Image 1: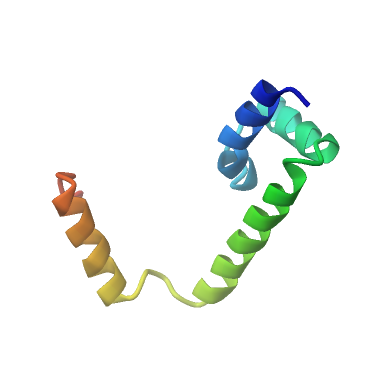
Image 2: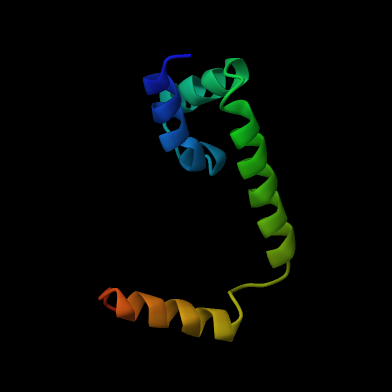
Length: 84
């Protein structure tokens, strides 16, 4: 595979896994992952990690309050205004 093809496919990987890509882009990423021996292991890792996160969060409507507070603190430190 050309490095540029890998970079482009990997840059869209999370959107692909979340089902957020337009059909043509999703098909291109899927095809690349099916044929590229260098990128496929990363797809497997990201997919497994995403599945583990979903299983860990099963039954939780939101993040636990300490985690929410920590994320809010980090966002404030970066200068991101609150959304509520």
